[in-house]
Length: 174
Length: 111
Image 1: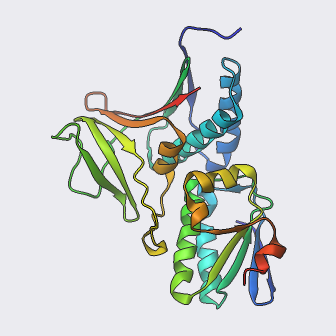
Image 2: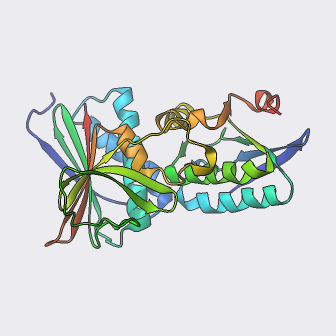
Image 3: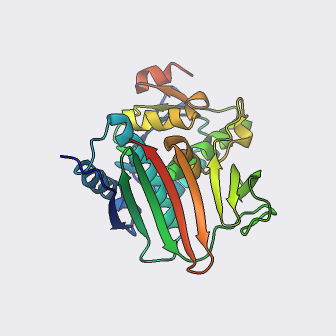
């Protein structure tokens, strides 16, 4: 019988990219013990996990970085949490933001620009800013955040300036 | 990164032998492809028949290869994508950018 109260699970992130696939299988298996996953949800969650973990391996220096799952039916929240420097953009605007509720375009790297909506000085939501007919020359070469945005129902980032905790928060409707 | 290669009718057919097309292999893959292109191979087929999953880093490497071929008027066809990988291309809308075919034989007909 599936539980009705929120279920929280914390899982340490692997350090080796070649362990990601097994890790993803383990997480989905753990989830399946608590909630029934459709094939579509399974696929979306797998994509989200692969990209969150890949991002962590690439950019986080926190050996205790963790994936946290919260099942509060009908919503699954997947969080990637680490402690360290906040996200930095190549563009002018940085965290803490001054203007709230604004939608801006930020550059993460040379071929990686995304639109975000500022929710508070330390929190923003990733937006799907797909452009039709983009020519090959101007295609991005980094797709991690874009994949998570497209695979989820909501994808946000939050930095806590006191604890230095960085959290990527991904919501998927089950 | 393990690749097997053969040339068929002036097309370089590359089969990725690894199960994972991911962060640990994407940079090396890109370098290997760039070298082949610089050595004169401008028509490429890349087969993912052994690949179980592919991540954003590898997608980025494929885009970089496509961009490298652009000024050379080269062509790249991807083939044997499993359902998950195909789904990833559709999710990112890269299925509208890359030529994707079901097998090597059909891919070779694109040249």
